[in-house]
Length: 88
Image 1 (cartoon, rainbow, N blue to C red):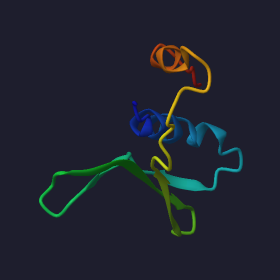
Image 2: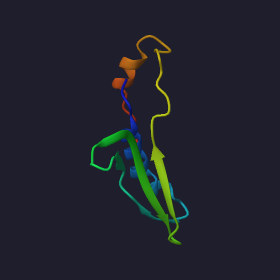
Image 3: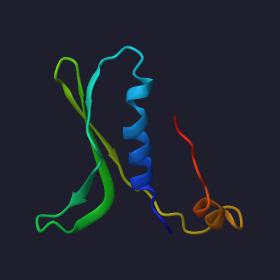
């Protein structure tokens, strides 16, 4: 089963600033990978660091939390592979 952590992190980091109507976000970091001490991929999780105008930092983490054991509807997995989500 595919994990979409990269895709979700890309959508969040690329669109969050456009939705900051009050202009309080100062810095939106690029998604980073979850690496172990040797630099190898530890998981598919991605992290985005954000800072506000006061310098307070925040961390957004995207990670898999469960694995479906079977398709809820026949053909769902194949349909998801072809899914395209459009953002602003």
